[in-house]
View 1 (cartoon, rainbow, N blue to C red):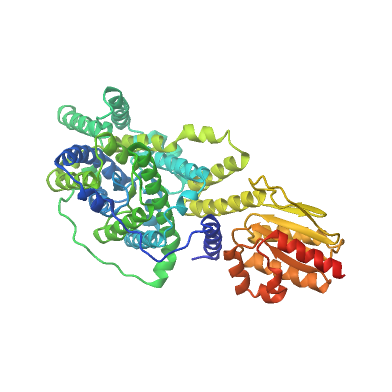
View 2 (cartoon, rainbow, N blue to C red):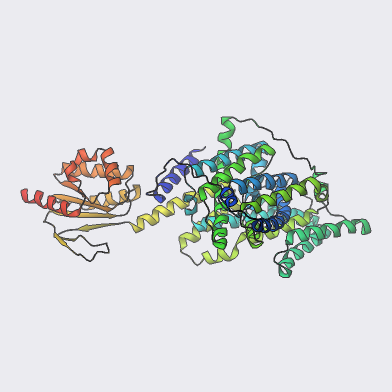
Length: 584
């Protein structure tokens, strides 16, 4: 990984440490697949519901798997194999009862770029590494931490992905027949504008007809899969138009040849440290994107069904799926919100529905694969244009523009990085922005108060027992309200330096509201103690929590200051400070 990647990962670890202040990794593995618990009380009526939902979801997933496969730079067969194997493993080993896994639009950009740079083997290695990263995240109980990524970042790169997907489908939708189209956004559109004379209006008509069907179908019935209806109707129409009028448009068979219905045999690939280092940023991007999308989908599903996702198990299940699919030539897998919601609305309530949907796809793959050759590319482009529109979330984007300027800035930065550069950079910078914004907000909400002469020990609490302590002249009390980490340590150090001219006899540092202290806080505290001692100033710590006291002992602060100068209550600290002043 590059120096930039290492810095980003270092800050991300700080962010995780702050967010899970009191969380301790117990060492136990939180892997409890929902399938096992669902089967304990399974019944025939539940199976009937799951069967209907599974069949419907399988039919809905078919055109999407094909379209996402082609848009990602692989064959329709690879898209289907990914949906079958990956979808099965997500349902069998995941932590959500209704999650449907498979290839999704979010991965089109990153997969296409990896294939362009490193080939199919590079994609397989990146996907495998991403799967291992997801498993490690689940094992270390980081399933909840990923939810702390700010919403503007998620919206920003999702909208950026949507625009990128839209731009990749222009060539097929307008039938330009361009080859070697640049993967970069601006050069790609430059090529489109230079070749407007190559637009095939028959292909455009097919694309518009497909769009019309996809948009109209939900108005007739929300249960009908618009994408599948469009593919069936348009494919039959184009087939007969070719026979009757000799009009033809490019189909899947024209571009990829006859699709094989044989299940690919598992295969390996060569691994080396050089290859792993080269693909690590891409693998990290796949893992983070998979975690965000799958847990977001699971959260939406929980809101509808009232169930509760085991987020750590879900990450492990997603990881296992992404470890398995590369050996069969598949592309990255994650939870799909649209298919998951289709599963719920059609009665699916257990992972059995997700497994049935993969069986439906497998049967189609084995027996109906030759028919897929006749599907027009313009029709698939129309399917993906609708997917891009739904992904864009433009209403959400407009809503965020009413938020604070910092949120708007983060959204715009993430969006433009995704579109103009690539998703890897966007996610890395986005996570870095998340860390910086979080630290800024913590620093803004962390106060350092200074007291002298009198101190109300109940101030800042809900207690009605207001007891005033008389603080002797020459004693200053500093209270830190919040975590004592590197940002606050610097702020506290500046406050100390600004008050050096007064030179009190005793400084009390009240730490009752400090949940933890990091190495920078320890370092600054040690410097403060030493400089104070050089100036003949005593330092007394009060209200130190047991967890913070342990850290102070490990850093030998107790030996530097004296163990009796670390008090568990402010009353003891003030009595000690007043006594020291009296002796002076």
